[in-house]
Amino acid sequence: MIRGWEGEYAPNFIGGLRLSKARIFREAGEEDGIGDAREGEVRIPYEGKVTTTWDGPLPPMTKENAERIEADTAEGLQQIFADKMDDPNLKLEPTMEGGELILHQNVKVGDQNLGSPFLLCLSREPTTRETWERLQASLPNRYDTWTITENVEKLQFEVEWAIKRWMALNEITHHEIVKVRGWVVYPYEDVPPSGDASELLGMQRWFRKRRKYKNQEEYRLAWMLSSPQMETFPEVIDVELTRTGLNLFKTWAPPET
Image (cartoon, rainbow, N blue to C red; front, side, top):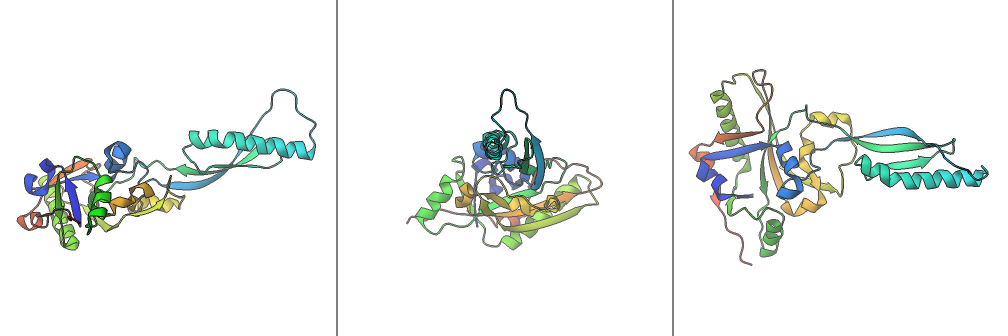
């Protein structure tokens, strides 16, 4: 796996790592070029009703006219509602019951009060110049230093001990660390599909991005931290690595062909 850095934040320069919570990447979003403004979102399906009222004269309420009016209303309102409710998949369905429309919506669930894991993000090593150029184009230009890590399992172990050292230095003696690592998938175009609310408690939602980011070929290591001694962990922490940990980040140069 490889990783791009701004030189001043490279592990061997600072002696460790700066770990950020997943929400930081989401909030950086499009401008930064790393995060997906949609990553980590959880949406749940919702069905409701929309009632419409009419001003002015109406044509005779034959079955044909009623169907046409309901269909035109649904079509006219659908895009307005979709934009307002941030749901391009929103649907309004005529019911033929006196100005009622059925609303099918994917509601975004707020997660500010839920935990957000700390991430270390890597990418698959490009083996050709073409794949390297695709990866480079998908990441910020400010990355001027590249490293390669061959043993991800060992890296996870070393970073976890660095996190424990950080907690010890901050007098956190009781804690829980939940760790997950794996490939990011790119299964959707616009917004994450609706899912079960139980996904709110898992970390897999932070391993999904939109297809536009697929050239990053990203692999993530994630750590969810909790402790009765610290209600809220900082958004960013700086952890020190041992010499063994630092040696896991070797200098890497892109392929010539």
